[in-house]
Length: 151
Image 1 (cartoon, rainbow, N blue to C red):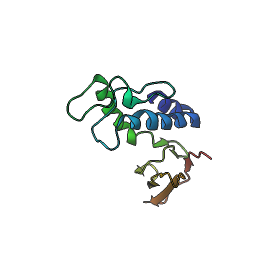
Image 2 (cartoon, helix red, strand yellow):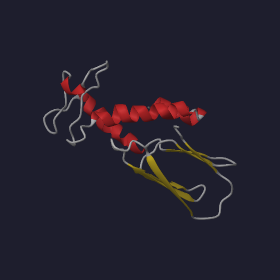
Image 3 (cartoon, rainbow, N blue to C red):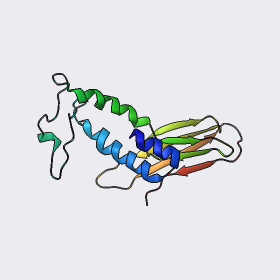
Image 4 (cartoon, rainbow, N blue to C red):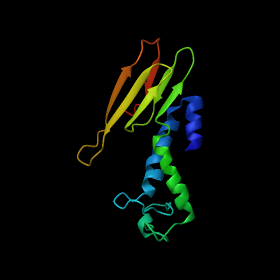
């Protein structure tokens, strides 16, 4: 994820942001067992038809299991607020919005606050609904705002 983050920052190639999103959803979010906070998976088995729930270690427990990868797994959740926005400074400032995660970004150099609200997906409505609110603190020169679009 760090490599794709840096590559996006350097090249602005959207494929790196796409990769980051897949790694975040499939790699980071998938290690937490949603209905049991604190219960994580030791490893993600690779292969068609494989299930982490029936792997060698299976799901951990809240208090009795703490394998070495748990530390990395817990640390990975610090990435939830990372790489949502990328700022480009210079003569014409630019803001790239590349992840759709409920958040607020205070773009100090331009005097704007950008707030994202995201309606959670459900099985009955699989369309991602994102609302952006932009408020200006001062009149500002020209800037660009790029929003990652997957059509």
